[in-house]
Length: 556
Image (cartoon, rainbow, N blue to C red; front, side, top):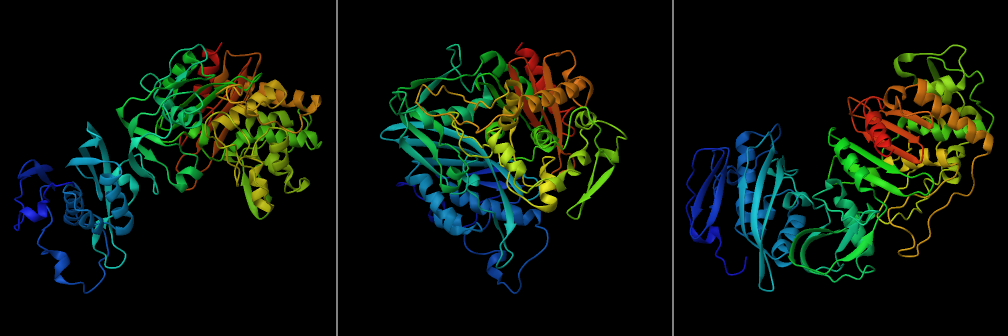
């Protein structure tokens, strides 16, 4: 790193070992090597387990000593600017070397000091303190990261499992760190009333503000500053992730972008999701499509706008509109709801195998009877649900332009059992809270209004439209189903006291390897619509329901 002398060049003996979990040995002028778990750093003279020869590929769980040795070897080399040695201590030397080289040359980061924390199993957390210097301007950089030790595929020796996130937690594989004049000027985002939106006040908006800058930075008339930022690679761009500023060295001049967000509802949404480990929610206005609040418990990925999750029984809102249009169901007519129903070789169940004898379709919808929908699969073509989602609800067309990146839902054409599963929001169907809030908004408004966060008048973009609307009869029945569910069905407890101009649908989506299902809830009240998901939370009425209902109440 620059003219700084490397650790390995200054000493030919092994570093001393101190006790404790994060012991420090200071060498020369401020260069430190750290010992993990009290066991000392790996030998620098080539002696040790690796030099004894490889008679067989090592297997089995990693020992604490192996984790200690691999982690220390990597962190010591990284801290000392020894790129080749650090990269060799990983399972992908080429990718690691490229990113570690860029860490110095492109990101202009120097004087790196790394302090390991207390490891758990094969994972070792660590703190990084460094300096970013660009054109005689320097600022301190501090962040936390972690690495995981794995066995190498060729010899089974312990090495660091390489991912870009090891270098910095905001990096995805293929991304890089760059310091320089930012390509896109900063923006000051305002709420609908002109108040300033910041991540300090609204932590969930980090990804939203990044997206607004990427979209409107140049258009808003700002001037770029000097920053350390994450520059997204191809895979991140495909996932619609925006570049991210990590450190500002020289202030730019921000432009101003006004959004549709409501400061009061955004604050309420932040508070609501904070009470769950993995919650996301969106609130919007059905009559216009304006997005009023976006919040996620997680700060790293905007599940509310870009998530791709099975929506479970909230999908039955779309399916019901299809069945009613095709005269396969009617709100107040009798409809089968057996304990189980087999289609395409799959046996579908209701929750706890309940059944409704002699009940109406409205009763099946309100109680979320799966078999009431699966039993109609044989009367549908493979693309019926896809067309209904696209043509009436504006979903799965990949044409929304809300002002920041979004995932617009996916309802693929499927066959046999998968087609049947899609009717109840499983199979290949994927949605997020924005999509499902839009579904409730379409029912309330009677027509699809594309959600948006920035007025189209700002950049003269064209909002997406749906080719057709539901008939008055279908719409009336669909509202009746949702109103009955909010008053007497699985959504009644969450929606208590919010009627009578309301409607709701709950959902639970099973996820492989997850003990509890994702809990979904979509609803409208007056000129507000909202949807939320609590991942691995359980039934939607108990988890996402209270979040959505609280925001509908807060919005008046």
